[in-house]
Length: 224
Image (cartoon, rainbow, N blue to C red; front, side):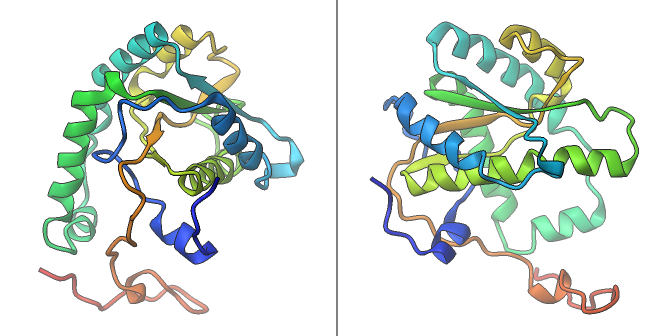
């Protein structure tokens, strides 16, 4: 059974869920399979269909993967932020603190998450030209977003993280993934949500991101 959501509601309420993951309710494999089936309907560069989804539900394997997540997280979140990053993150008062509060909650409970989804794409792009990178990421990102939308429609919550990045090789080894051939694109906790009443997020104004015909520097001032 899926939630009664219009397409616009589904698109605008598929949130990054951290604090409202139901950590005590297993997710049926059949439900995850449905989401993967829909994910692989996404467009892919040259129809090469290079996507893969490693789903971890077995308890011992989940503990091993969760341990890598915890060790990688400080490395992944330590990237420097630009002044524009900070301005946009704090455009709405308290939004950044809520994100980090949710991240702290997720980290404290990561071992209890019932399923992890680690999407991968064939072909590494390390040090590759932008055009090559665009082709690879363009062949996995639409599929993963489709997976997340399908999960939301079924009462499941997800959050895209890149925590696997700093320890990707170690994670690949634990999962039996051939690191030289497959690039692990994300680390996605998956669980039923506590309640299904999610709302659209507050975002920066359209005027700051929409450009007609040519690039124009935004004159909109960020809110304080």
